Image (cartoon, rainbow, N blue to C red; front, side, top):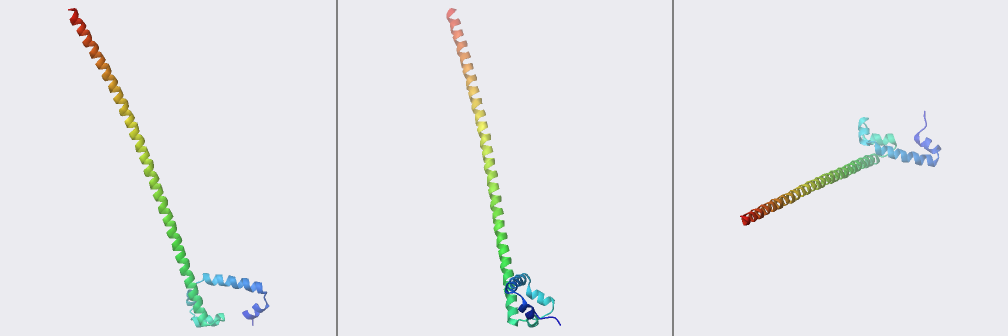
Length: 149
């Protein structure tokens, strides 16, 4: 017959046992003990006996694993919420940047239109001055012509 776990552990170095214990605890945390126990159709008492533990220990382990899983799920949800918040802020910043860019573009278009209007006004004033000078010149010519007659 094979040796028991206790016999194997008695022959091992303490640091090996310590490392194995840490690794085993990590593995247990990653296994949903209650689900595993149910899959093999064992009660907590039967599982405890198979592991060399007492039933309250198995119950405590199952509870600890469930709490650990719940904590992981809550942490993952919190991280996802933070990521969603960051994506929303990024989208808002992009929208703000687009709005500001469009506003600047509209302002430039308005400035160009204002400049065109001012150029047209200046041209019209210059044309008006030419017409006024032409009219004055024609009036003066007619006055001079009338004096000579």
